Image 1 (cartoon, rainbow, N blue to C red):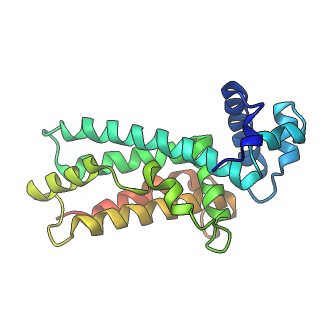
Image 2 (image 1 turned 135 degrees about the horizontal axis):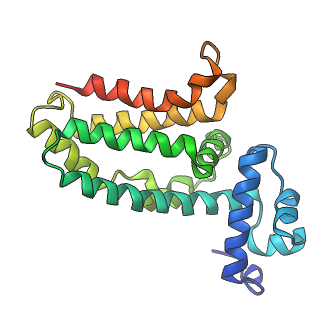
Image 3 (image 1 turned 90 degrees about the horizontal axis):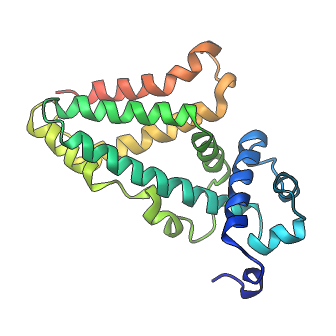
Length: 214
């Protein structure tokens, strides 16, 4: 539960401004190197005032991640619902379209970069005990529409029927983890030309979907 003394001077507009400016700082400097003093400077407030809103950069980072994941979960559900209606395309084609669009969003957005930085920072020994619980409603659970799309692909014969829904969803989760690593390392990926790095997340999605084809 939040400390009541931290709530006295809070306003929603200021909190939203902090989240916006802090995300930009984390993206620019990296989650490891960004400090609360950097964020206070970006917002135009004292560190003392910033600490009235957030206890530390972990508390702040988790608030930003929660906001991003909630928005992404809503967007994913909307896109999947629309894809479910496109019965003129195979389930596999629609799953591929969904995963490639996700890859493009990850590479081309500040939100994607932030989540990559955030995931890299929160290795098991850094994560708070309630880490999973705090994000259970913002992206850790697969949208029901994704399960329905997988079922449609198996029913129309485009998606391998020797894979369970759970296996496909685990593969999608693993794909996103690898894509985030690509975004995070970027130009430092060995064996890949710099101009090809931005294309790699989409190519990974294509390769995975090809492996699911019947």
